[in-house]
Image (cartoon, rainbow, N blue to C red; front, top):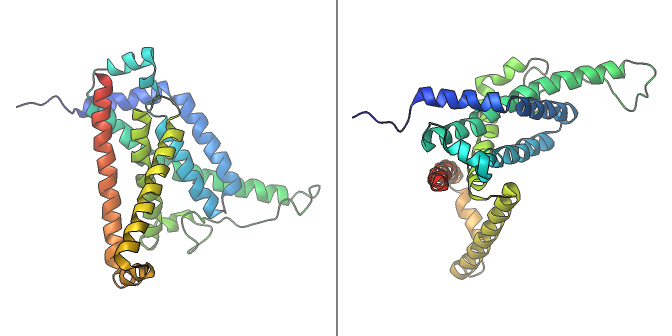
Length: 259
């Protein structure tokens, strides 16, 4: 029996529609990201924070058109299923976002280092403002050849690259759901909801640990340290399942939104 739930041709057309309608917005957005990376190219905490915060805003605003009457009607009348639309959203807010972040980081790092050294070589500028520095790739890893970005994509550094992508997978599915669920101020409302839930869970965990362990909460850390590899694996699996859960809920929420 032939199903009409998912068609790769329609998915391709949805990608085409997205880039045609938002080409200028995408160009401006990634241009700004490249400029920001020019200034923070050697600051690892700032770059990680930029990836997370920018990703949160990027994802929360992905479905902004469905919350406006005219645009929402036009969006839901597109001849494609909600699964196909959600698939495009997932790819754009994870794989595409991560790939573009790495590209603009490389571009910003190259441009920032070049301009910094160019200004440092000018005699009429104070030396305190710009100091000559070699090309470095600190976002990817601190080891290897500092002037060769290709070596940073070797097997020995894949764990670092994967850790950056994992941080994207943790936050994007949640804020994608928030972008579908909330009509206004999607980023702020999603963040507030997450903070409130986490605070409640921490309080409940603390109370439960106090009741069970009789006030010896540090014993938990001692027991976990004995099986740190197992615990780490469980946490990774949990985050993967949590991301899948948020995507599934997003699908049903998007379907309800159509109705």
